[in-house]
Length: 283
Figure 1: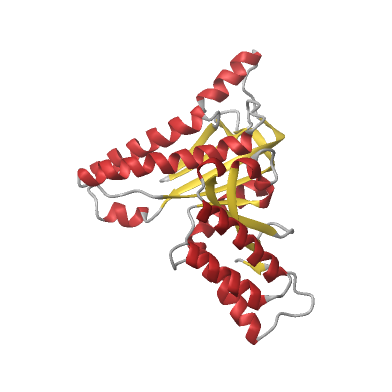
Figure 2 (figure 1 turned 30 degrees about the vertical axis):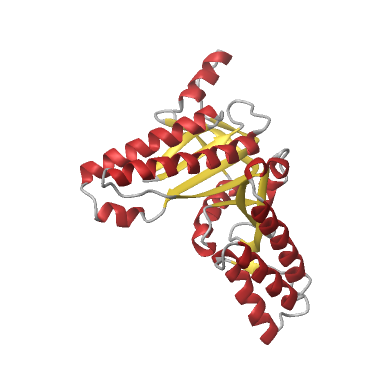
């Protein structure tokens, strides 16, 4: 059971018992890119030492940003904000944690490279929404955990980073949380239908804190938004033109934008049906 959960129950003078409550939380999923390959090419003892050092750094950031560390699943991390303790700015804090992790990993990669160790990069998926949190299991063995479609969505967002060649992806639900759009710069990637959710989900790539963004990064966000608007309005030629501008701003290569660009080109050849609403269905 996470230390902060134990402290929470102690502060209430309550005994831990089975049961869940519904809360609006921010859910964080991360995974190490190419971890299987790293394991295959590295001695087991070195793998364990590397993973321990990585976990130590990442979990420290989660706790400093008032998150609750829930589980290690292999090399993956599951954490939440706003349960069991109240964290009013939970979405901003979870995103801040992800951004801080990226910065720390850059320093760690330099140190690891000098020691001949493999490099670690992570993909992160974040979503905010109402889920069930509490003690799960049986009276013989229980753990503090989280249940609901929101958990599945955060996990899927982490996985979808592979397709768009992005590192940190959030849902529109998180973007709408207080302070997020004011604090972080994002670019729209797509509008997808994720299995297990009935409503379409707009997904966004996190470009970083607004306070650290240069002019090109701001332009990437703005022009990407124009491209998405054109795409949803079935103006595929304009969407392609805008995405080409984004690629130029990013030094000539924009794998994330290529996904939408290729779809626009296909729609110019074979237009979508009249009732098409922009959705991309993922399996």
